[in-house]
Image (cartoon, rainbow, N blue to C red; front, side, top):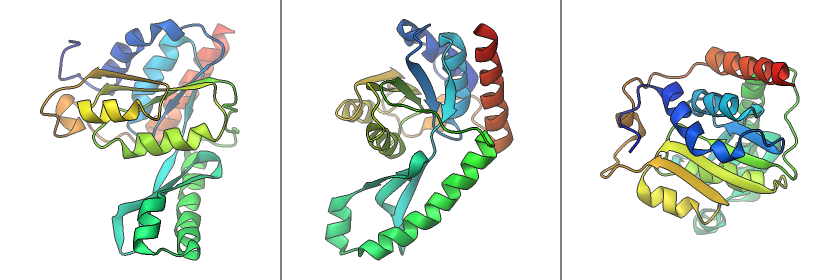
Length: 221
């Protein structure tokens, strides 16, 4: 056991980095954080591994009138993943999907401008991509991120979190090449229970961590 609860996301990231130490110094590795809570965790991992840190924005495509129900997701780079079962079961027209996707893609663009400024998103083709969040409850965001990333041609995808529901971690093994869940407490209930400090990560903090990681990487070269 790594000791629960974690103090905060940064401490959890340091713990997670130890578990991912086999990737240290590999020039083919990219660390991606899912905003916003995954970024402080991913920052510590990227620093420890000497790998570049980037953000991967995923937005759920909610069914109009039933926004909690996902008919798919859209991610950085304009990648769209559709849940065909939901779309077919509810008879959702392509133009409806397009309208929701258009709205969410504007939000992705806004977040990417906010976090990355004018810096282009990086290439993932042939890379080992480590996708990090602060925890896994249902895993829907992580699953959508992995499905979207698959289309960008990485060599392998590692899903890594400090804490997650055991059943969700097992299910992710079907879509990721490797899954690292440091802790799988039972009963799980909610991610926030396993952190002493679980305040909202701000856009400013995300931007600051991305900039700090980029400077740290540049100094190592």
